[in-house]
Image (cartoon, rainbow, N blue to C red):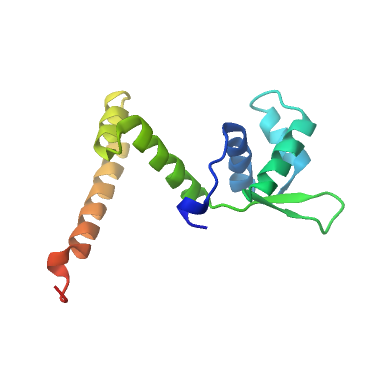
Length: 139
């Protein structure tokens, strides 16, 4: 599924997806038990949310056994990308730089995190250099 095709999950749906991404295919009872560790939520509420998510094709259901087993129908990375794109557009006018400056300016960043960020920036720079029109022999 491409980013544009992924329906935007609600906060509650995202919580359920987090459980499914972390634990894999799960029963309603298991998902409910996991959610109940974070907040009070009834079994029927969890069931209804999963049914709505099935309608939105955020999850798939295996009906082969007596207890229905649900699994995520959307990949974690694609969903995060979609949500991040929408957030950056809405909150930062589409500017990744403003997002990074805000994130790094509001929290203490460890040396290890800074090293990871530097490696990521270096990788992006190399990727951009490789994909630039100046390196395209057809140009």
